[in-house]
Length: 233
Picture 1 (tube, rainbow, N blue to C red):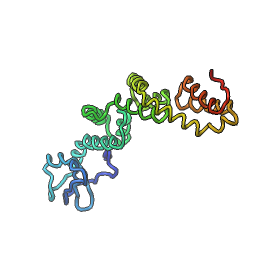
Picture 2 (spheres, rainbow, N blue to C red):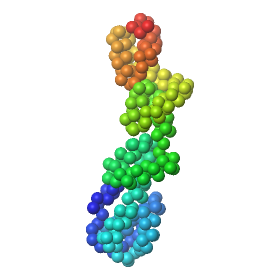
Picture 3 (cartoon, rainbow, N blue to C red):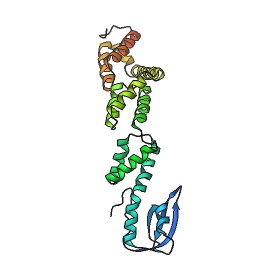
Picture 4 (spheres, rainbow, N blue to C red):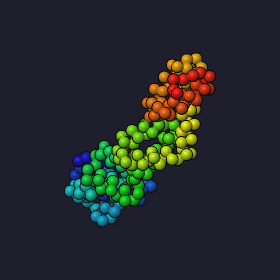
């Protein structure tokens, strides 16, 4: 039997419970030692509910039933671990749980549970993502494309970009970041071959999601710094 969210297969056959121990740092998970040679991990609440104790016989039928009942607990545990690393969109979490082998019903229930706790919020995720990437020098089109790829609904993406577009500090930091980047990458080229440097820079910024108005502003600044005239009016 494949146990979603576990790296090792569950033991087969009946087994005598030879030890019970709480997983280190996780009081909600209990590890059952069987016959001193194998282990099964279950939600502590299920262990208590089933009245399991050292010396009791755990039949294969009971173990299989408990593992099925444990799936929602495992899914929640894994989802919380995924979100502890960094904030994610709802689709990202659901995709990760699917890759781990959880059923669609369990994934849907886990997603709803996370949402009810405020741990999954695509609107908040989009705003934070847009702010972070804007400050890092990403263009709005690239930010939009990445958020859509992560499964965020287009209206939420548009709202996030509109909100960050009015965030003066983020805009200033983003402009400074992109100017620093293009100066480092193309500054010396502008002094030698301004026309060629401008074309290469324009393509580079376009791929990063910047519109032509912004690209033109950057080109004019670099042209002015190098003392040349550009193609952008």
